[in-house]
Image (cartoon, rainbow, N blue to C red):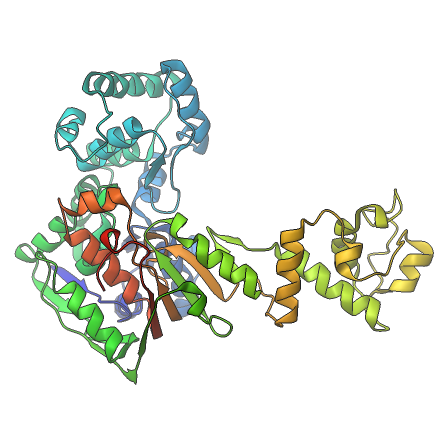
Amino acid sequence: MKTIILGPPGTGKTTTLLNLVEDFLRAGTDIKKIGYFSFTKKAAWEATTRAEEKFMLDQKEIPYFRTLHSLAFRMLGVKKERVMKHSDYREFGLKCGIPIKTAWHNESDGIFNSDNEYLRLINKAKVMGTDVLDEYNKNEHGLDIERDLLYLLDQELSRYKKEKGLIDYNDMVSKFIDQDISPSFDVLFIDEAQDLSPLQWRMVRTLWAKANKTYIAGDDDQAIFRWAGADVDTFIALKEEVDHVDTLSQSYRIPGGPIHELSQDIIKKVTNRYDKEYKPRQEMGDLTRYSDVTQVDMSEGEWLVLTTANHFLEDVKDLCELQGWYYAHKSKNSVKLDLLLAIQAWEKWRSIETTLPVASIKNIYSYLGDNVTKGYQKGKTFDENEEGYYIQECMDSHGLQTEDVWYKAFEGLDVETENYIRNMLANKEKITQTPRITLSTIHGAKGGEADNVLLLPDITKSALDHNDINPDELHRLFYVAVTRAKKSLHILEPKNYERSYVL
């Protein structure tokens, strides 16, 4: 029996799937006979973690909660050092006389990233299950790609991997299929199915051929990885092969009113999709539009700032730094957390008669430079068993030479960083491991959510050109963006209306 479970944004798809897992466990199904596979490592990790907590299991007891490429890696017994790395691609480029600055398969989702368009096209052909020249003939690539060189590089890359005994993620999935080494499952779950490539769909079919029951979960409306080879049309066409199609009907994220209405206006423009409806929350959301980024007030609350390409975020970054708002971008905090904690601890330490633990003092010392006597800078004279030290103790016996304010005592800080931190402290910005403001591309934020979402509808020329070929991709992309908002959506008018998405 095969069932499709459609999970619109915020409808609790993972919870629904884990509830099904629980039902099967209660009915006597062995956890090792349940396969739960997802497109991204993040989704697999979430499912694994929640399963550990919900069912009181150790990770070793649930070996088949993972990504598809991770399953192939495990079943083939591949050693990590045999997997193609960035350095291997660079060596290949040097051998062939082509510049390759970046090239790797993302461990999280298996998506191939490279600055070299030849390599991207070769990889695209592999995940699409097509010949590299057939992929070239689709004309979805730069005009400077030479057909003959593309063919030669494809052949040479295969030879290089064979000579070195190396394998990439696509090779793993292909070998898994060809060797027919799929485990047998009583119950099989395939999550994030809308993002699977044709090659991964072939792998899924080998899995469900040996499964008694199969649940395929996803949302075609959130399929935004076609550029990486995702094949949402196969997911949609599955309705002709399965026994049931169930839609989760209640969103626990999307508020009622203008945000929900805008999301529906966008997604109804998509030509090929499952026709589905879901209810928003009863609470009404807010929709606000701005003509300039300086009008946006992000001084309070949790924010997710979304755009189609990272360079569109520069004005927002400038605003955050001017206002003293702590943010994260590309998985990095705007200021190192250790530095911020050192500043906070230092000001408390020097201003109040109190002790600091050794770990905090060592962190402070790492930023004081010559303000700590040579030989004392790594804090080797501290007794780790002591609960803490007063600042005067450190000045008397542990090399500390100053008790000035942080921006005078801490060395090596540039003026921009200093001013930004001073703004943060003046605004009493909360210093946490995860900043309350996250700047991201829409692709990078898929699966995320925030109380407040700021959306920049600017798009690149290449995206515009591609939109003429497949306009559904942009509709789905901005649908995903709009549906990240839990309370309020803020839309910044584009700088160039001719290069923007109309919202």
